[in-house]
Length: 479
Ligand SMILES: *Cc1c(COP(=O)(O)O)cnc(C)c1O
Image 1 (spheres, rainbow, N blue to C red):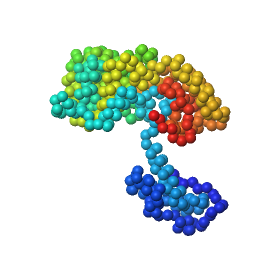
Image 2: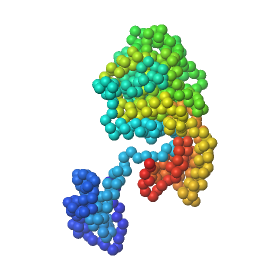
Image 3: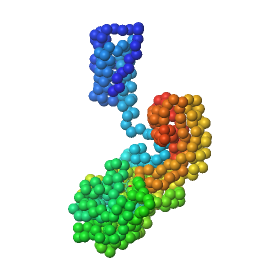
Image 4: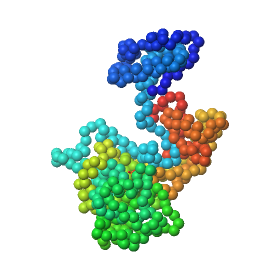
């Protein structure tokens, strides 16, 4: 708890001992009618702890010789502090924030914002018992992924599908199933690290697979894979280098070529797509993110991708491919350890079904909506917003509009820049970091970005312009 700040008062300056004696006991505080109201809502143990915290804080202040104000030791005042402490507790959990970073899928901000249909499905799954592993028609046990599998098969053209906690888990379980204590051949140019914590070589080590690197950082040829194949080879792995691109004198083996090699030598081929698109993003001016369907069609045996990257659903690891390989993954004991919970499955199914039936998928999935939004719409919103924001912030701030580029984030389409508009906010004395902090102190917090010493509010992912007008006067609940 924060130390209680006491202001100096000349009106009342009792000595330390008498002040300490005047401090009420926890029991007296709890017996007050104000505390009874708190005890209706919170358990006694919790309220007692909060009372003790306030009294301890005050006791330390008195001992330090800080001066009290009249009324500071009164029961009402003390209970007011207890209530404040309880209110502050309620605020410290996960709070909604405004994503003005210009990174549409920001891992630190929870990646994809879910489609409405997914939110509804999630609420139903949370509120009622559901047919998670129950076959309602037959009245017996069903499989947890039964609802998802046919939809994924339909959307990707694969023979079979399953789902685990996230894509890192999908890679882990696949490597463990196919290559435990055997070799996996992978190009040196694809040994990636994502977000610091996910490194392909480390996941491989944990899975039991032995890494067999081939080629060089910038060039790998089919012959490199061919020459590395031996009797210990269990898998050929291709990793979509989703968060960087090697440019210049480069060579990589295409998905189709690798799949053909695998089938000739009877070795399964897996591709970790990272993001993996279910629809062609070139319609939004974005190239470079492979379609899962295309990768499957090229003969790759196992394809893995994330549920909460460009797909725009909940966190999940989707695995599609040939029946015999997917079945093996489903029987691996790790499948139980890495399984998705009912809320995820409900949200994922609803999101995938949108891809099946929506007349306007780019409108129904917020991630795609943010990507597809024409620059002219952002510009129109921005031009109305700038004067409103300027007057809300006051003359000490200077607010103006600039062209900028946003990115998808979470490793998708790293070199792809999406045109956007930013509001540059400067202050007479405050530096960019200070302004950024002020905006984070708003309710809800507005998370912008600081670039080249300037604070920027990127509008690509902002749908309601009022979201970026900071509210510093207390909580404004977002509905
Ligand atoms: C993002 C990514 C992962 C990790 O996926 P999560 O769903 O975040 O676990 C793995 N591989 C690649 C290529 C990625 O881009």
